[in-house]
Image 1 (cartoon, rainbow, N blue to C red):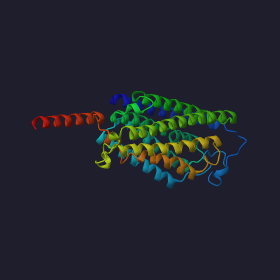
Image 2 (cartoon, one colour):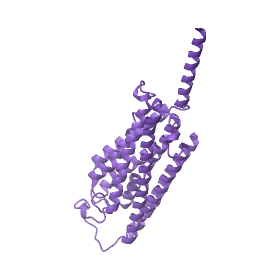
Image 3 (tube, rainbow, N blue to C red):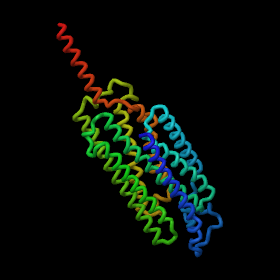
Length: 338
């Protein structure tokens, strides 16, 4: 089981690296294909907003980049330690995604000094936009694990042994669609670039719909437990917060909200085009993309799933049945003695 999840995450990372290599290898060719009729500005820092060679249309702030880069790395380090201490290796895709996401922010340091560098921009865009697919995959896996741990699989529309496969496969498909669209959209041919942006937008929209369905399914799951299995819902009410499964349930809900906000932002951004108001605004990038995603992953720092679903832990419903049976046997024994 461990090797399967590790190999899966490794393949995901390999795909990211491969696509990055392809994009970077193609950057020189694309640069050579630029429209030579548009003169390059003598000073790329003078008017980045109207610089056709600056893909961001602004100069990336090193201060904001440093803050984001540092915070994401800190979260990745803490979760790496949490996985070592409390387990939940099935959250590995999130941790790997955090490291690749931090690499994307690291590329923004290069864009600050070289705002017209096509290669740096491609690497930055690839890592920033595609790394969250790993966060989404981790949430998919977590719901299946939580349902099996609580022995409440009947409250899921899709069986737990299939829910991870179903949604992770949809995540991979939408990831590949976005990657294909992104590779086409960097073309300097306006028509080709437009086609690529439409493909990329389709991938984002499909990912949003898939994750929205997942979030609704999760909310229905929690409601059914509350309504039909109150003994499971209140199972850990007398325990500390880091042993109460409902705390983990809230953490997953917060993570879903953060990812949905980011997905809506990216979908609207792409619908406006790469030179639209949202795409060329750094405050919007950090406020509607970085911050929601950061909350979506940081919520697992205090609420690491391994603290609630320990390795080889018996399902709680079995524990409940065992406790009830022991209590009944004790009562029967007391009555006989009486």
